[in-house]
Image (cartoon, rainbow, N blue to C red; front, side):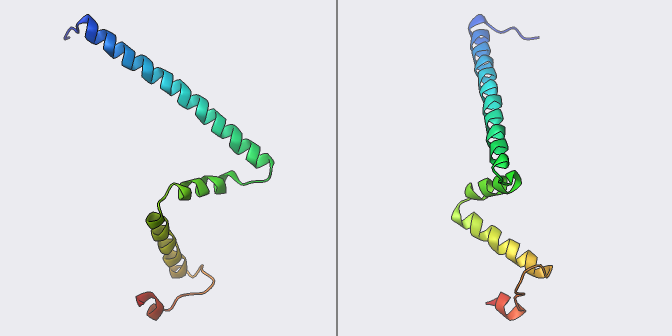
Amino acid sequence: MESVDKSTAKELKQFIERIERLEEDKAAIANDIREVFAEAKTRGFDAKVMRQVLKIRRMNNDERTELEHLLDTYLHALEMAEHPVSMAEDAA
């Protein structure tokens, strides 16, 4: 095994301790988020839908437009959309 000088070992230990503190912070934040979802649920909101809205809000306009187009295309292909699009409309 290769030995590490004291200054390198000290630097490594500092990085590890910083990561450990950040992991603790991350766990605390995750708990806070769970509590907000639980509170929203008690007020009648659907956490599953809220998570989907959050996912969509993280997208830029182009990503959102592409997702909406693909979803619409798939729903029409499966005849799940209210107004099926004809092949002529798809080509336009």
